[in-house]
Each structure stands twice: as structure tokens, then as C-alpha cells.
Length: 139
Image (cartoon, rainbow, N blue to C red; front, top):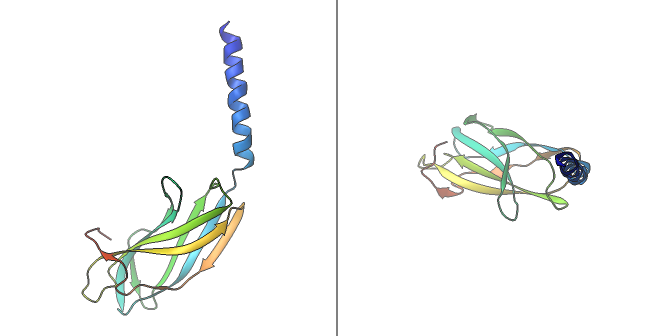
């Protein structure tokens, strides 16, 4: 009596898993570019988010970084499908590229990307000097 119920449960679990494994694309991203900052050096960290209806997913990040001119950045990210056809990606950048050396939190929209099984490379320059709200966050 226990074995048939267990078998039905197993079949249901397998059938539910098949569509999600068919649609599970691994999309990888490489974001790079130059921060436009009027200081010769500053610190920053980036978290890459995918905008979702309920909770935004952190899909990539850097550690605390020290930047010297020409202020190049590079961050990788990956996600396995979005539930729709596009990823809506943005950066949270915590930085001290500020005229008074204060720490700021800046959100920068990186655009929409089609959900696909493969790699996307994006090169974007970002104006950072005094951008974002003042924060007590640590870099």
C-alpha cells in the first residue's frame, strides 16, 4: 500500500521537474567599462541585480575594489531564467567617488537582455562622481 503512493509521488515530482529543466537556460554576463570619476583613486563595490516582480535577485558582485585612473571595472553575473523573456539588470554601486570623500549608494540601470542559453558581454561607461544618495554603508 505504501509503495504505490510513493511511486505516484515520484512520477509527479519527475513530471513537474521536466518543464523546468527544459526551460532552464544558463545566461552569463560580463559587464565592463570605465567609471567617470574626477578623483585619481577611489573605492567601490558592485552588486548586479536582476529586477523581479517580488524580490530582486543578486546575480553577481565584486569585492571591495580600489580604482586608479583610468577607473576600469569588470563584473560577472549569471542567472537561470527569469519567468519571462528578458532580464532587467541594474547595478548597486557603493563608492566614495565624492568631492568630500563621503560614501554613496548609486543604482544604475544596465538595460534588458533576452533570456538565452549563452554569454552576453556589455561595455558601458558610467558617470560616478557624486552620484547616488549618501549612505552609512561600508564599501
